[in-house]
Image (tube, rainbow, N blue to C red; front, side, top):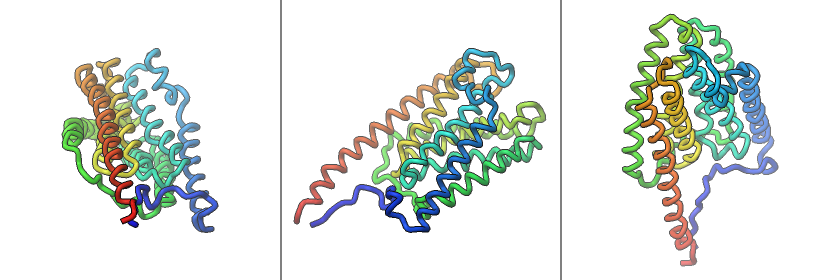
Length: 282
């Protein structure tokens, strides 16, 4: 009899079935994940932490777009991913990436800007790196696991947004490095660049990688959609992409999430009956 194993060979195991070393690693990873969550909740000013919800109704001056978007980055790149990683972390091979990418990138730009935020993000980088090393999936994190068949529609949809977002990120990095103002001191330009880059990175993983595609899809879509809505609401704010580009970005986010969900679910339904047929006695 031939069978097909549809689950990942690194899917989450119960703690009781792990070896002693595995249990220690799992506990250490959990503690680091909790440390990242608590660090961001405690060290981020309350007004900034809640600004994705309250910023629409309060005046935040020249930092309106920056503060609201950077606050969303804190939630989407640190708090939410690490909270998700507390449940079946071995399945979440994409979810571990945003904390590391965001912390290291911002730490580097904070250092170059001589920002007081450098020490905080240096600690965040160390914690994110520790989480990566301790991740229960181990070396399989590096295994890409491409989708069996690329959908050209999704690839095209991805490229449509990836190119302008990378250009936008480049402009923001140039401002972060080349300007000396409040925005650069608070690494606001750098934060906006990281948001754009994360949309591109997570979008690529959603389209091309088989494992943990749903987090990558929704992460890219929610971040892109949020930047779009903020740009529509505050078109003259620093780093706003404006109402037209914001509307297009929001539309792309909705279509991208819906498209990936539709294609991936269709692929799963196609694999299911094939797997059942191949599992029947020869």
